[in-house]
Image 1 (spheres, one colour):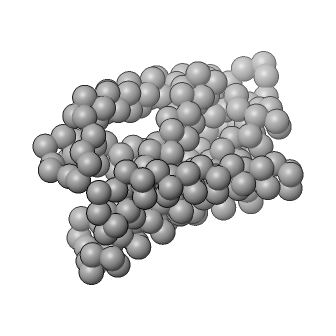
Image 2: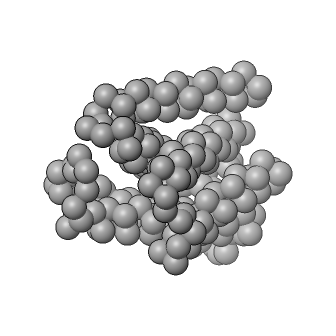
Length: 208
């Protein structure tokens, strides 16, 4: 497990260094470097997040936890999301400092809740070995909060003037992708709850 942690951290640091280099190269103004780095870093978090949602929609959290290898892979992947988002926070915080802005604003409250939720959920995943109702609700509450933040960000950027703007079609695609994954996972959750209520021959954790 230590080796996997080391590989995970090295990979994330490597990609985030590339993000910073890309931001330096792409920025027309040195004061925008950390803004672009934060934006690109958030997309790495989105990539990990979409991967998690896709896996959960396909396999289901109950089935993932039924296999020790898949369970540890899920925990590591979730922790990777948290670590990357902490690095993203560093870029974001530095960007606010460069521009003399206050990071703690009313519109930032949901973002703060998301960071807190990610960290707490990651800790909860590692200290709880078996899946139960509380862990199931914690994981999905955290993922839904993150989805709201991602969706709110991309919807807000559709008509917002930004330095080095991305195509609005990219945001439309990401919005559609996230909504589709949430719908797919809503169906998966309904199936897992139904199966938990019905019981079965195989021993499955009770989440309902």
